Image 1: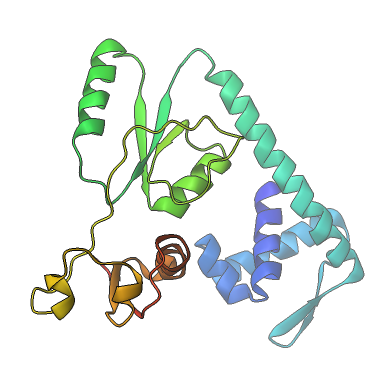
Image 2: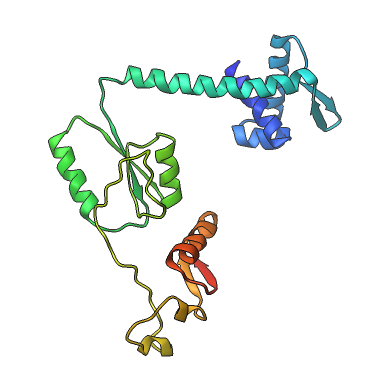
Length: 222
């Protein structure tokens, strides 16, 4: 029944059988049959079908809201039970900044694996915000990241190194001849950020509000 409830939630969330089928990686007819099977098992209708559209019945609306809590509790129960089952099998999950190219982490990982050969290590790659979400959700044990936000008291924050921010300016630009340049003097030079489409807004916010760049922004994928 859990699987059928997930299908039902997907149909309601997407307001579409076809989109729910794509999300759940099954055919549209199969997901429709699963919803009907759920209704037969419950003994009442969840959806009122009208041609190619549907609306939730009062019972269906109530069931949907309560099922969200039920599935969340079920998933948490499975996670906690899994932790208990693996209590004697220590593992380390590390979040690693996708664009970092230094060797320090690889050397430390090699040393750790030599010292603790029986402890499996899993690496989760991501950008700044993705790694923060992994940490907040408890899906990683530690994260190696740039500091893009204020430190939180919820975590142990260790500063491993401090680096400079480098800005590249074309040599033919008159500003390049200055002995030093402020962000205010760069306001007429477009800032090119390497960021995915999903992270453009976060990157722009950081460079505008934290770094202080007030000019236009252009983007590159890599």
